[in-house]
Image (cartoon, rainbow, N blue to C red; front, side, top):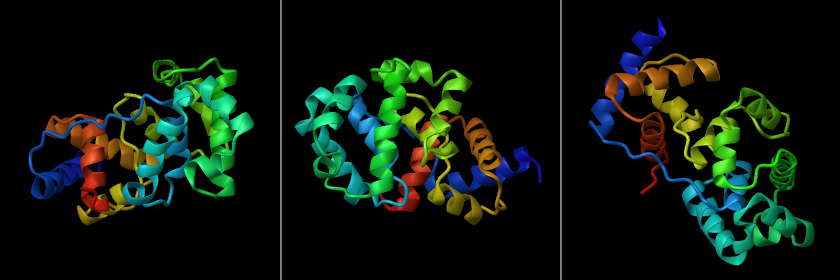
Length: 202
């Protein structure tokens, strides 16, 4: 089947289960420490119960980590595992590596990262960090105000339930994007609505 026909199938499923919206785009974070930790720690994590409370706490205890430079300074002198109450060696390493890469590229604020991600070469640079895949790139964009579809396990399951076959990441993302166009919804808003429905988030 073609992308348009699969997108129509997905759009029908969205309307049947989620209604006509509108689906607001998620707000993301203004605190760069939270942005980096969100994208680094969220894979295979219960977001609402485990990660979100820790991200909110991080912003309180490390207010100076609102910028990448401030976050990098904290990481040089304090233990992120303690601050996040989350001891996972690979996820901690990913957070450190993303921070260093952004700092090396002169990215310091949410606005900086939003603009920086517009360049394909910069997105490719992020992909060189261990633990960062195509979904992470789309996801971090949404955290700083882009409107993208970051396809995770919840979105894959929802698409399967709609009768969409198992597709490569880029193909399934295109189906979701086309479905959003058909329905007249914001891409990031549609993604977030599907994610909340499948994850059981309140």
